[in-house]
Length: 327
Ligand code: FAD
Figure 1 (cartoon, rainbow, N blue to C red):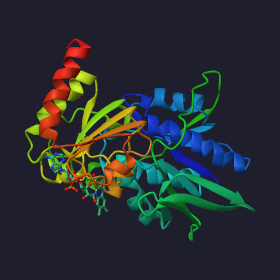
Figure 2 (cartoon, rainbow, N blue to C red):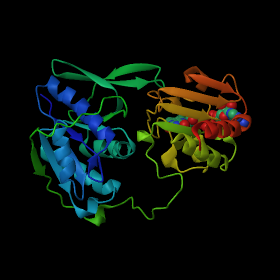
Figure 3 (cartoon, protein in one colour):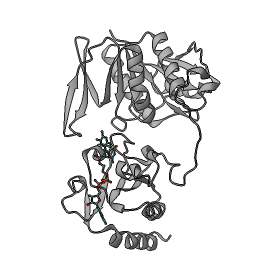
Figure 4 (cartoon, rainbow, N blue to C red):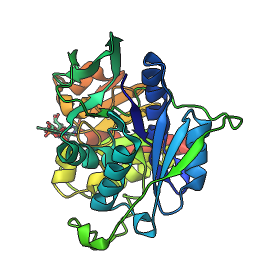
């Protein structure tokens, strides 16, 4: 029987939506072994998050708490996660395959000599034999994977599961993780945090995203996208090509190596629709694409397509929406 540990990320004391999805996934997995969900929370003040993890289905929560864990630093979080994995004696570590998950999964797998399986959507269990199901070929197919090592680190694709709902009547046990942290282990150091008007955004939680791509031609057009997003009450996102051009910060990147989003409305402007971009928007409800190339792949996925130069569409769209929404 395999023992499962799930890493539940917290933001200012509350579990992230991805963490609550990972708890749902882990409950399903633990049920197939008739086992319980064991979770780990990491930070400088995580009691509330540990209790929330219990309310959301964990029976045991390992609490990795230290003032050095106040801000996310990959080396310190890696050490905390490694120590909790070891202390819990789990075989399988589940974590959301989001920004932090992507940072941690490979490093942790290398450190504990585990198999690493990313972007997992589901699993099957037969005679204690687990097969992990994940997308391949840019989401055109799925494949089953079997881990070759005893220990496995599994990254769950965000927005692929329901979020676990809290039941405050649930009881559980909180166990401190025996940490021995020091800044000496920090190899990747945060040197400076910079303010950016566009960067204070959690794309993963946004209901409306106005995303721009390389087809915008220049950085300044993102100010118009921000205006459109403001009118609609949404946020700005971008393709990797737009981020790579330095037009917007990389935390606005949507796609396989960026944020996986699930808005009600996704407006893609000057974005071709490469498979790596599309794999970040599979759960978007309505996609509107503005692109001057009728053969752009984004139109295969879009619910509404506008084949036009964005320069002729964007000003009118902003103006008309302002009138309609009284802004
Ligand atoms: P382009 O492909 O250059 O497309 C620009 C589009 O704008 C074109 O369709 C063009 O017709 C249109 N256009 C041009 N001018 C106008 C105009 N005036 N009006 C309207 N439309 C116009 N990409 C991501 O986005 N996210 C990821 O997470 C990601 N991860 C990756 C991971 C790997 C391992 C690799 C190899 C690639 C990844 N990429 C990712 C890159 C991806 O393959 C594409 O290169 C990228 O998405 C292209 O960005 P784009 O659509 O903005 O640019």
